[in-house]
Length: 257
Image (cartoon, rainbow, N blue to C red; front, side, top):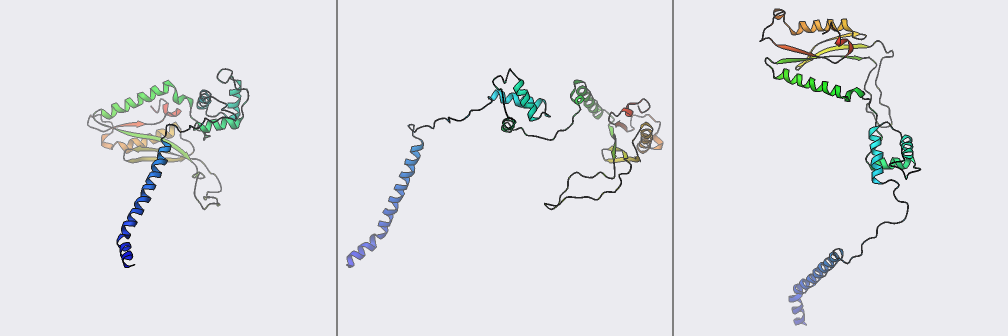
């Protein structure tokens, strides 16, 4: 009995080692066999999905729908539906389609309803693009010429005491409010001249700006830019100023020019 106990005590670590190794071998073998099943060239492939109604539109027809929406962003779903049904060329096989199907097609092509922004159609005309190009070229010429030119930006902006921000923050379930005067009052127009370093001069008044008000503003701007001892002088070393404004109708009058 002593011999048996001694023998078992001496060889207990060895038995534990072999038992662990067997477990590891079995585990590795199972993993290898499992991986070989996925890599087997004789594995049965999944059949394509069958049954049910197929796609109503072909990829070319879906692209035609998206092209129509890109050309006219204000189209409603019913207008798109009418366009599809009346088209006997691209949608020759489509005789009826629901607006929910059209909506799913648009969402599948990353198109959703958005807020409409009004853009003047003249903005993208070739004539206007050419004028913008000439403006950029003229500014680049003035910047590269010697002596350097200082750009003065003049613009008017109208506002009212009842104007405020459109969005605010508050606790969920409570309205976001802001205090305003009870009466609207008159509109205020502010005309300002801005240099590279900040606002040079500004004149507010009640009501809109007109030619005479703009002349008074330009006279004030002239006195702010040109010192008394430099007025009427034409020298190469004197600073040069370029007044830039938008194309409001009274800005183009002869007396302003």
